[in-house]
Amino acid sequence: MKLLRVGPVGAERPALLDQDGALRDLSGLITDVDGALLADESVLSRVRDAAESGALPVLDAEGLRIGAPVGRIGKIVGIGLNYFGHAAEIGAEPPAEPILFLKAADTVVGPDDTVLIPRGSVKTDWEAELGVVIGATARYLSSAAEGLAHVGGYALVNDVSEREFQIERGGTWDKGKNCETFTPLGPWLVTADEVADPQDLDVKLWVNGALKQDGNTADQIFPVGEVVRYLSQFMTLYPGDVIVTGTPAGVAMGQPEPKPYLRAGDVVELEIEGLGRQRQEFKGA
Image (cartoon, rainbow, N blue to C red; front, side, top):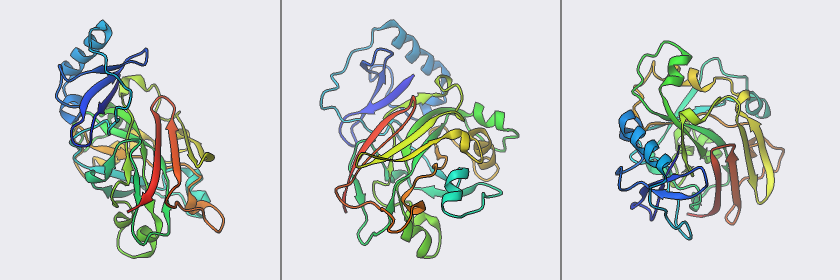
């Protein structure tokens, strides 16, 4: 299923995109698309049955804002340098273990919402990523297969990053990852049963119409199942938590000088096959 949340910021309601591309209202069945829903197979089954019946009310999509497809996110865990191509383009050795950072849930915005370039920023960068949404509590998992079994769904993410804040200002990466609006998410949460192989998805991103990233999740150093297993050794992952699993080659930081970092007025578009497309205009904070 393709689950989403639509409506004004802070007042989104749950919806479903059916196989014919029609937007269907789920607010009569569920209160939100969140961890509680993903963890409850009986409710998910009722949603599937309702979708297949064709009885769900149709929503008029004209002018309707699409919000982030997951509500009440507990935590967002980022994986750094997780593509061989990206590590190579910035001259880094592939890491022996996954590199972790955290993003605050309040950085999440809808897939087409405006993204704000922080005041004083000169190195705001793009990162198209596969987002993994946890569907069952994961702690001390023993295998990558177990890791995959704890995934509730997948979503497209732009892990916007300020490289000077992240790398040159000391401390942790987090200060370059947690600026306001820095995690556009969506448009859909695609349930895990509809993604046959998360290690065979094309990832693309354009800036002002020019293709910048053109990769595939097969290039990930640590695949999805292993990432979930690994994280579960250090923290408990709860339903509705989001993992952003790294970006392929093609970010501004990896390009020759003068590096084409984002400026106010730039438009970024990105997509992952089967997970939809995003479009953001960047403006000054």
